[in-house]
Length: 90
Image 1 (cartoon, rainbow, N blue to C red):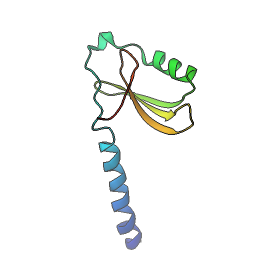
Image 2: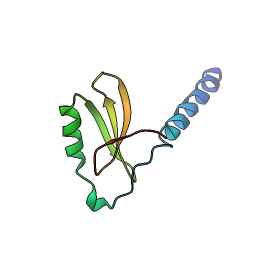
Image 3: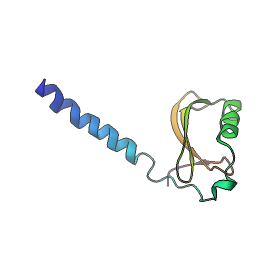
Image 4: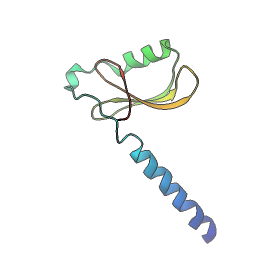
C-alpha cells in the first residue's frame, strides 16, 4: 500500500498543478458584468457551430468551455464574454 501511495501521489499532485496552470496565460478583456452576454447564448452558438459542450464556467474575465470542438478534439477553451471570440494563450 505504501509503494502505491508513493507512486500515485506525486502523479496526482502533478496533474492538479498542471490543471491549475493550464490557463495561466489566457487573458480576456475586462468588461463590467453588465456587458457580458448570457453564457447560454454562447453555448447555443457553439452547438450550432458543431461543438459538444460538456461544461461551462465563468472565470473573472472569460467563459471557460469544456467539451469537443467541431473536429471532435477534446478542448478546454476560453471565450470573450462580450464578443464570444475565442481567446488563445499568449
